[in-house]
Image 1 (cartoon, rainbow, N blue to C red):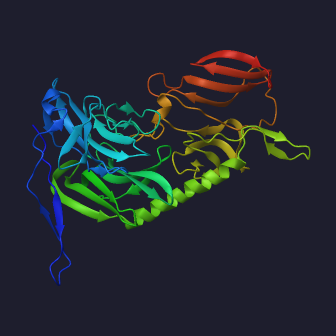
Image 2 (image 1 turned 135 degrees about the horizontal axis):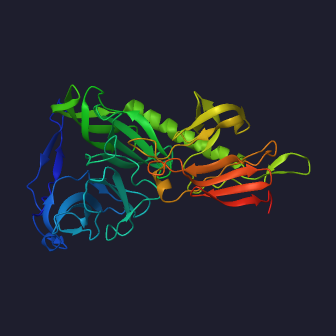
Image 3 (image 1 turned 45 degrees about the vertical axis):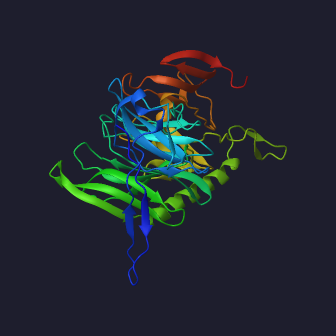
Length: 419
């Protein structure tokens, strides 16, 4: 019922040798948790990621337990005096969310990622060492799926916090599948809790990747521990082994992404939401672009029919005739425009937060007032899945002013160009 605490000592290498030995001491901590485990759970099981040491010196381990009602949950145990006293967090994940991993994000704030039976990774945050957990629905929770169809349970993933290029970030390793029949290959992801970038694959493409862990030394070293299986046809074969991979090239790629973020940040002050004319006739920025909570930014980069996200996240697909303009695109003709996918991203949905709340900002210049009785769509959001194609929120330009559509119904027409 109670966990064991094993402490290892790294012994010095013998004279003339470079290899060192790790010697494990006698297991301890068979009892003494506060609160006692038997008060809350019927079992305590394996399935937690690596432990961390917080900025104030607290040792924290993610753990998995089974409640009195038989539900598997994730939580943490922690101690500032590991050999004498341990505490178990009173808060826990929703039932069915297991294989937790934990990082410290900010000062005294914990983020816990767990694989949930509904088919996604839930991310929980706590500012009181796990006494209470809140699902981070507005940022990272439910971004990563466990399978191409986003159903079923997943595996243990790597999850670490780091400071790279003077920016606080998190690194994640999880299997990605291009189709249901392909073997999963580990991918490295980078996020600062707003932007999410798939840095690329980090495991053998001919093997099926399962559990993984990450280590970032604080210097140049980024190391991945990987559980791999052989592949027989379309099926997963036998256990192939545990592999240790030094991700030197990926570490450099991570740095380049962070530098791209910094460049995008520096370019934002030049963007406007409401250009105005100065006395000299030049365009000035009447309202600066809001940046708090900014997730993606489309400007003037286009390639291969894709309008590139300046933060290297999710690109928009260009339709019809378009040409580059200052910090944007010019669309010509009927049906021309761009679509920024949200629910159509497959296994991993980096804009999943839009299912709960989002703000879409666009700077639009209209060359001529439309003629006829039908408005020209300017911007909006459509539903996917059930209710496919229904305009959830839309803004159109008509001859007599703006038209507003909500949930497929025009709610306002002839709204003056300027109020």
